[in-house]
Amino acid sequence: GNSVTQMEGPVTLSEEAFLTINCTYTATGYPSLFWYVQYPGEGLQLLLKATKADDKGSNKGFEATYRKETTSFHLEKGSVQVSDSAVYFCALRNYGGSQGNLIFGKGTKLSVKP
Amino acid sequence: KAGVTQTPRYLIKTRGQQVTLSCSPISGHRSVSWYQQTPGQGLQFLFEYFSETQRNKGNFPGRFSGRQFSNSRSEMNVSTLELGDSALYLCASSRTSGKQAGNEQFFGPGTRLTVL
Image 1 (tube, each protein chain N blue to C red):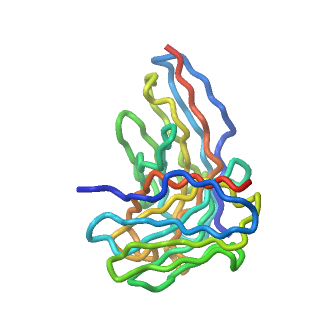
Image 2: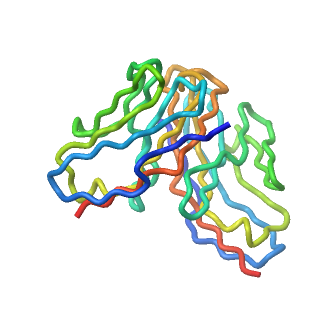
């Protein structure tokens, strides 16, 4: 079946530090991959996405590359800010013969200290 | 353009009661999906409605049901509430059915349900 595994949190960093949140997936076919962010008291916002192997999604300084050979979609940012503090979810969506709903990882809470 | 709205934002119920949550999608969006978010299980898919028809269903008991109206607004209902139903319920809208590739979902702020 389809599943997403992401690194356990919480992750605490100082402002301007480098961020990596690991995400690996299991899926049949060719899923689309997503990173969503959830700020306190809010719903999910799409941060970035990639729809095929070797695609790089990027937004607001965050990047993730779809690696089919390692079934990974790690999230990176070169210099985090206090405003990046949130919970980050890796997700996949498999259109090939399946039902098309989003399948999420457990989430990684990021806290950035000034 | 207004985003996805969910009402109410907070709800407190007791075991055995039933509850109805509402979701209004972005204008022009015809698909509404519902997800349950809990600390233990994370985000889990409940069901998707498209053009008033349930297109997809997750692995939840029959106490969880939903419907969609002709204006694409959706409601979900939980009957005979249990303590474990306490969760944040998120709805997401998209232009087309979730089975179509490239279809982005936009999430609402959620309804926080507490069952006592």
